Length: 138
Length: 138
DNA sequence: ATAGCATCTGTAGTAGCTACAGATGCAAGG
DNA sequence: CCTTGCATCTGTAGCTACTACAGATGCTAT
Image (cartoon, rainbow over all chains, first blue to last red; front, side, top):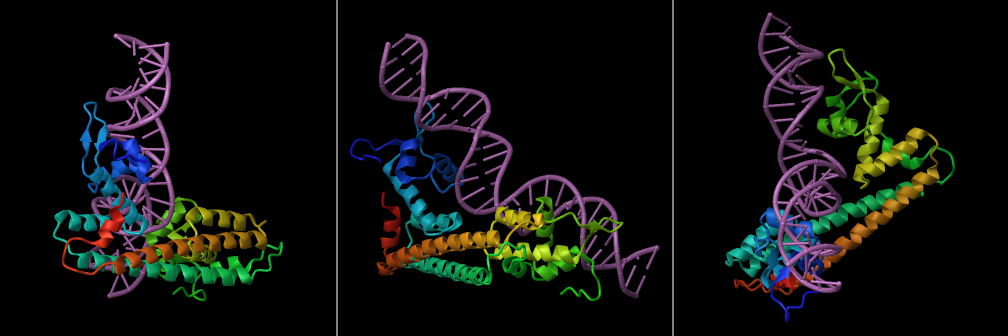
């Protein structure tokens, strides 16, 4: 992991390990403009500072919370602008909770249907299968 | 909807309406080989029969159950071969129930974290926000 | 015959990465 | 100083599962 007492600048590989975001993904985030263009060594290698690592963490955690990159872009624009209020962010979080709930509901329904189909199955060795039939009904 | 008493052959638009699968998607399924190449009119328009509509339904329902196209391809190969057993299909359904459960678990965790973050928020008008902070921690 | 919707092929775009190829950078050991 | 060898570079193509065109035909009803 990164040791901020020893250095304040890190190559992409160290940042990748620390944040558990692939190197290619970090470069991709830079390309689509949600990560800033970092400093470079004379040779052209990227060098990241603490603030940029923090930002990458924000992106990663937000992805883990199910936000799309566009949603994250909006969040970051709010934060970058500096004129955001906690209330605005709170509203976005609430909306996301709603999205997550909807997905859970849908998955639960899928689970129920799959279970019902599986329960009707006698697991025989014959090719007739209530699951296949259920899925084929016109 | 399709009236099977009046005709046994249907153009792509009617099939699309009946199954609620977009025309482009039907052609895409044909292209990737999970739908067979249908008959054509002399002019070149696709004509589907009842069996093909049934197959498309199978694909659509399976997608709704969260199967990937590759998983559906495997299911269809099993069914096409004719030598599948209900036990095999049952096992695949069980595996899918496991997948769905895992997703639900993950989403529930996301929901919990989002709620915890949101709860710590006082919705003030200041730019300091516990949500942003929580997501940024290195 | 013609109007006008349906369908055709083929290509390019979407999200969010991932996986190369082929060329350099850079740090440590001899 | 030089070499070895891993790290990094750019750029492009691939993945899933579609969706959205453009421009050309087919088909049907009047």
